[in-house]
Length: 358
Image 1 (cartoon, one colour):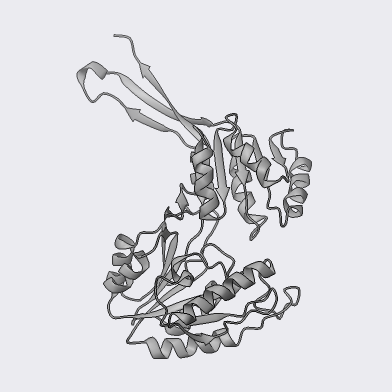
Image 2 (image 1 turned 180 degrees about the vertical axis):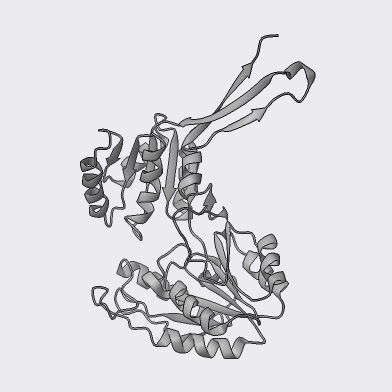
């Protein structure tokens, strides 16, 4: 945690005065983490809470709570002060009570937009950080290294069965390289192996449950009925959904406008970079966008105009490292995570003014 020295002598009456800022712990924190990364996304709440001197109560995901219970044992064994970290599996109803409890000074939630924004309405006066969903876009322009773009986009779209809030969902490809790129992309995605995630040779495992696989099937069927064309996949098998690529899909279809959270990509050709940027921005979400280009003007133009929390040049929007600011705009959330930025949210800025008597 850093402070700042601020000269205050902007006018004669403030001569010989100086300001010093320092950050102080905000107080008890309520944290709620999701199922898809039960360790990493919870650690993004617990680690900065410990570092900033705040106690935290974490509700781990109902589908996989044991990971963080084990981490809680490790934290306790490491000698963290008793009571500073509490891992409490609980029902959604009890979690709702935690959201509205005035004793908590900060709510940090990672999960679905519908749930997150309702929580904000009930949070009262506490500070709220929301890391919500998205329908992340990727732009591939005519100057891009197509082999690199294909390799990374296949990973960004289908790893973890697409159950990542920054998974590649919407793909915009310059019409000058559309045919060449799509041939490579469909072939690479079609070569992925779907199967048991415990098998090291598996590329794509099951979705979290059969209900989500069936929901994805319904969305794909809706897109097909509206004129969408399935280039690959598109049919559920129990909890498994294969890598799926669609084109000619109306942007109003749920596979485009909502968060799919599934191993599917909807691809669109574009004529110029401004058109691609406008298409990415035509969304209720704005988390991160990938831009594959070797044109510096296109990279800067995307950075200035894309309505997102992060622009990743020559890589996928699924890229994240722990110490970068991470978060979105519009329906994708409020605030930023990443060690420094989380600590800022978990602390209050306090100013001390020093005056020398005259």
